[in-house]
Image 1 (cartoon, rainbow, N blue to C red):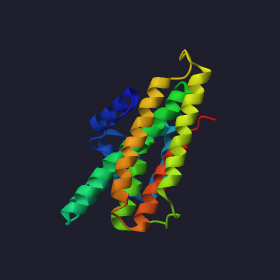
Image 2 (cartoon, rainbow, N blue to C red):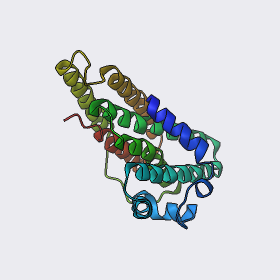
Image 3 (tube, rainbow, N blue to C red):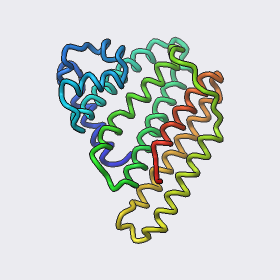
Amino acid sequence: MSRLALVLLLLFSAGFASAQDTHDTHGKTEAQILSMGADKWMSFFTSKEGDSTASMTEAAGIYSEVAQKRGDRLLRGIADSSRRIRLTRLRGLLDTFAVASVDAGYCESEGGTMFNTMWASAPGQVEDLLYSLITHTGPKAKPMVVSRVRKQLEKIRKDIQSMHNDDPGGKLFKYGDALAALRKLNQSFDGIVAIARTMSRADSDRILGFCLDQSKNVDYN
């Protein structure tokens, strides 16, 4: 996780002890926020607060926080301890993968405040996937295989090397940080695959599709 991402997550964990107590949710309860979903909640919140990056980041952080609380409740309710442990580990690996994908994009772009919103959104995206895995709800995922994600990660590796070759002095491209992010992507994906193989095909498709979408957010073109 990048230093900025860690700072953001620490701020969220410290300041979002209760989203409704510390932030103006404009009359929406946590249940209503979750019912709206991330996109509708973001639109609602920014319609009240403005569409600045700061407002979007706050909205994303609120959604992530309440979604994580929902995930905690759902995990505690799983009677099968082996399944609970497996899903808890998967949750952590997916968090690492999602944040690392933002880190990799940040390295290429020379920064930008929009990445604050992306980092803040990552936990909520993971939680929405976790919710679908635990409750077996949501639209059916497209068939997905491990090799498609591996191919995308290899593309990222080649793009990182190409950008480094164009800027060997590192004046613009953060080569070392990009490699660190790529290592996290590959390592966490290895763990994700190991767990996905123990799950149903439908759940595996959801998980691998999530990883592909996250890795495609890293655009070096």
